[in-house]
Amino acid sequence: MQMFAEGILPMGREADCSCRWAGGVAKIRALLETRELILRGELRRRFATADLRDIRARSGELCFSAGGEDYALRLGAPEALVWSKKLTTPPPSLAAKLGVSAASKVKVIGLLEDAVLRDALAGCLAVNGSDAALNLAVVHDAETLQKVLHTHAAASSATAIWIVHEKGPRAAFGEMPVRRAMRTAGYMDNKVASVSDNLTATRYKRR
Image (cartoon, rainbow, N blue to C red; front, side):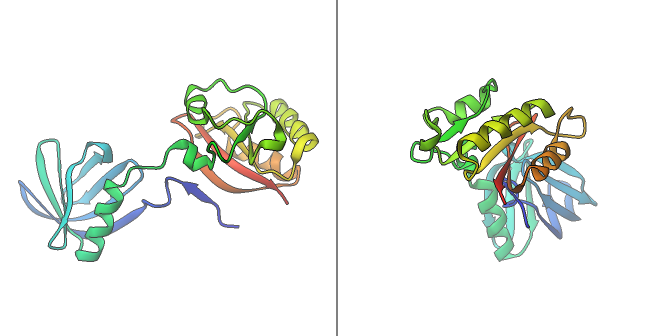
């Protein structure tokens, strides 16, 4: 099963091209990631996408300003338009990535202490499980996850559930132990959404 990371997959492009800048013309490889535009090769730069200004496609070039300097990547007309659109399209909100809204409410199982999540889910919380299109739980250890699964099974195990957990190689209870426990319990993961610098959410549904 292919799993998609909301807010991440639409980026992830790269191209070998030339770059015009104040110092001349350089042969580079450009990589467009979620939060960065990286130039490698004869000119090495790393830009936060939020810091790019005056982004536009012109005559087959992706033009932008950063750090007081102007740059033009010769990507070709089609690619320059694609890159420009990706860089100028606002990223989806966390609520949109999770698929929740006033019309598609979420039932939280357990505590919701993270401020970013509380803000994202404001106005989208279901009082009763029967009113929920989705469930969500934040877990920091195996014991909490088992309690969440017990509650979910007793309520509506047919409803998909977002499991929010720590991310990164130093996570005490991260992606791999969560996935093992969920698959052992009969769930399959089908979507991932970044929540914050420290947390990520994985959506699971009963097989």
